[in-house]
Length: 279
Image 1 (cartoon, rainbow, N blue to C red):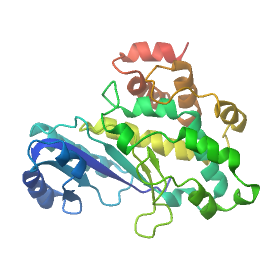
Image 2: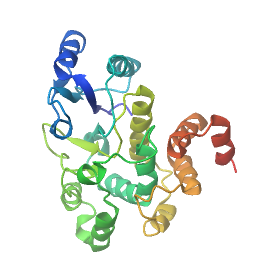
Image 3: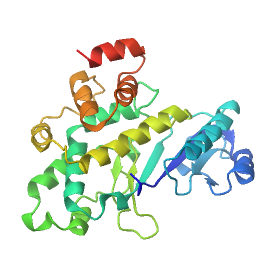
Image 4: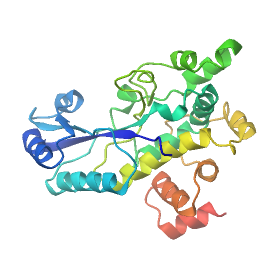
């Protein structure tokens, strides 16, 4: 996807923000090192912890090497990602102002939101404590909006964005779309992490969801079948058949499917996951 741009926000705890800012200014001056109010409120020392916001990035090897270096620096200096978020922004120009792509993406998200949330916990088995406050699910509200959607809106991209804009503090934030300064889709579901592999895995899921929404292989019948049959998003149960189903829909390689299923299931060895995936 040559028109794909993205950005990330790395939150951390237990390390002096001043020290992190000095490192970033020296090696990655285009990144923004700043305080994060949600972290400061739950810290014993307001000088500890913060957020690193990237500039606009492209999906290249050098980008992921930079992210790896930053995560390595934080980890070596005993920073923590406990009860933090790992937000990812993808440039909304990827929708090409096409209302069909956008609606397909919304329906895909609703259909598998329970899978996406468990996957987004990363290396953790459970959601962070602040998830419901800062990144709650959108399934029920989106199902209601879809049911009430006027036929005259369906071909109007800008109108659809307005209809599905529930505000910024949702697991899927569409409030920035159309903003000339920050025209992005924000994915707020992931738990914070200092593991660059988890960062890439999260990014690859969200990227692949959008790619699939634009694909000629989009399975409209299956997605419509799933729309109103999804379980509670936050029950944290394993729905292996639906996780495999989603991975088969959106990923192009067996390796991508395997990485996705490993992170979704948690603590499974590769051979076990592969065996499950092929049953």
